[in-house]
Image (spheres, rainbow, N blue to C red):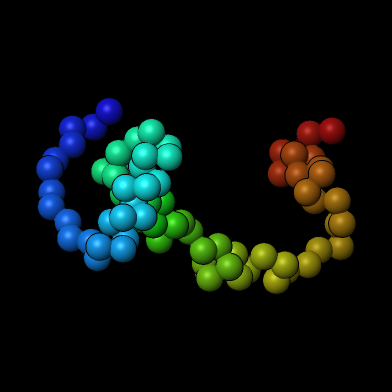
Length: 81
């Protein structure tokens, strides 16, 4: 487990009350819930959006008379049977 650093946060009373209830129901701590929520948020922000990637945009932009390239790519690249 990575080293944890202490920080201070401020929550509105209603949100803190809900966090306390959730922590109690899950038999865990508010800090654990907040760490997981922040980790998930950052993971989603860093997730690659392949539909916007320029490499993804070239998919399907070419054509070939050979219709079995995905199946027989070794044959065409290396002459293997």
